Image (tube, rainbow, N blue to C red; front, side, top):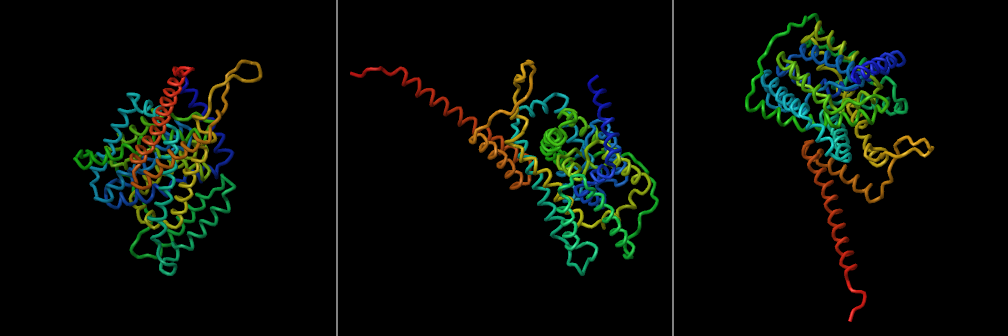
Length: 443
């Protein structure tokens, strides 16, 4: 009954939000393009996925998650699998197998309740560190893979550092207007520039009619594919399930936040259904949620619009879109990724001033006897310890480019503080006990 009532509540919110702020919702829907396009295009060019099937399936997933969860929950590539597939030119069958392995493991963790148990054990500073590290990783990735590789101005007039400066200038001038349609402007400008580049290039062709022709594919569960799927598991569970659930409650506190179990089941369902048809392995990422929120999305309506757009593109144009997507300006994509990374990293500021574990139940002071919540007092020492745990988690992620390493480092730091505190209490208690048993008068 609660699920049905939540669906009705979220549907009303979707309708009200899209009617009141349509441009902001559409702009927010495009906020995650900086993560989606580069990986999806490269995988499609390498024939590791089917572009048309990926557009149709991921679009359908967008529509379903927008209706069920009612928040701008993204559908984005599984980055570890994508990176490994690109590096080794993995076949389509092995890429599908890798996604299904991760999905199967996530489904087991979700249905057995292990994900929920893990969430209770992981302290908030570690979760914040994962989010902070993921945000800074996005910024670094934008600089290294998109912006630093731009050619001189005279060599590529429609994609150079002048456009980077122009996009950055527009970003900082509109930062006080949180629902300014920045991503929509970047998308329209980018598509226009890409079409101009295609028109003047004899080696590329305009998008044309290419009706989707679905086909069945049997995943190949080779040792390499299974290894890719297992390597993706820490990133998916930490960043795409646990961190995204926590981030949703931080960014949209007035809406029901998805539980780690439902997010995990969603990730598993998407990949276990799409892996038989050549769809790219996907997940829900905290970076994508932060990006779509940063550029104006406040409801599930935004990604439902994006999903409908992707389904139409996949059904009608399919693989003919490759040249257009490949020529989309990296200068504009790079700034969009930077903005998304900063938005995600910004959640770290609430670590000591509003994090969920800093609130405690108390009796209201108005004499009614009702239970309420109040922020508990935190000492300077505890603030410093929480900050250190978050930073060490982030440092592990950035240094090793691995969420699992950052997670382990943060947990070790957290429990080292607890162990030290326990040892100090035992030591002081022992000394106090010895002093009480000492004779009052010495001979």
